[in-house]
Image (cartoon, rainbow, N blue to C red; front, side, top):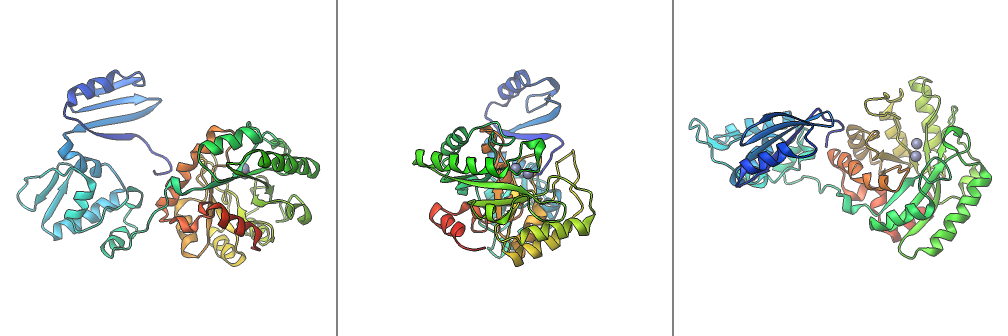
Length: 383
Ligand SMILES: [Zn+2]
Ligand SMILES: [Zn+2]
């Protein structure tokens, strides 16, 4: 669940490895076969190398652990094991000095032999997880099933492909209790941003749709642009009519760190702004984040009681996990939103959740994990 990967290592357990190896090498997605043995097959699919290794079920835990998590975690874990007289390898555990590795079937068993609870893969970075495990204080990490709604999705009122209804139905299929439509605001013309008049029309259309669907609450918000001076792209009295306001930077990225930070801080202090969308503006592998003092944003968000978004769109994953962890420590809550522009993208939530897990986030810190009754109270209350 790192943001990007170079290649994929797949670990499989089988009592008939040769058949599995043959099936994998012959699979229609295998564009090229680089190596093909009875217990390992390396292929290329869509330009990505995928290495499959197959072991007997009783050795699955050892091999899975070997290929899972950050290197730093495995180094510290190995040092810890040696102090207990145990060597760890991809073949299992051995008493130091014997070289006789005993396979381990599950990761849970491997950790328990080292007097530790199972440490979730997303935490394996040597960032305090082993110490927390020793103390029995590992976080109860958020799961995708904990998410009750999506607070930032687009429709064809601005640059989305879906309608209010089609997006609502996709959200119902995901089991959500609520969905908030946040289309772009007026100055973002390239994204067909809504004039105040069209926003009011949309607000009424959302209210009508909400009456139609008993299974889900449909709400109307806006992803309002943060203008260059930190003011917002709609007047306050219009923002006050909306159910929810996400404020984001989409233009004038090159204003320098202090001006950008001041600009976003000003927006987060608007009483109607509940969350800052994709706070650093990065697009993975394509666009660096704009220059902004994220630590200051986090402190100011805590003071203003404004949430920060963890945008789940796989190209964004913004805020990045290390900042999300910093936000947690500072008492800032987050939202995890897909920013979906079509129905299918609503199911990208898991990628946002994966980054939240990397940041040690528990569900009680994620606003859209609130059940509807509590979420409604949050909306009705002042910031
Ligand atoms: Zn945006
Ligand atoms: Zn958006």
